[in-house]
Length: 143
Image (cartoon, rainbow, N blue to C red; front, side, top):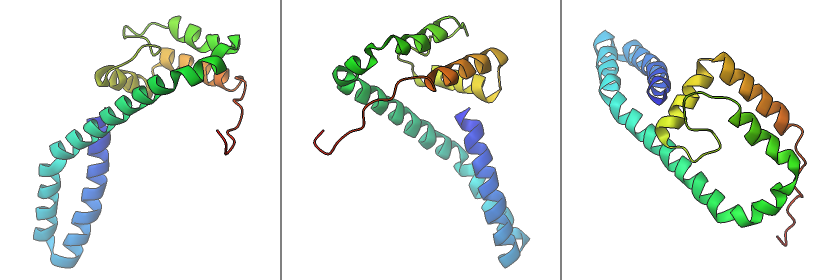
């Protein structure tokens, strides 16, 4: 999934830059730029995958760090509906309520991007649920 997204971005950038190089310096320069973009594709994929992985780890670390602050706010039974919604859907993957690794997140992303009907239904239910949740109190400067 990340590879496909990166490839699309790289192809767009390649077309723009190689087109500019060709317009300024001729067809040979455009072809050279195009080849350089193709050679860099795996490196760019790796960097983006690494960045997403680090973001995921950071989010999990922040949640763990703030769990004691968050728990009292989640005591309202309205917050139970989301996990129940997730539990009733089976995608043959670990549930979204579990701590997920990069591979599983990529598989869920693929379900979203491919507009899987069952996943789209769950996503719609979760979105509707989130719109009904009570609002957290706003932070003050003292907090």
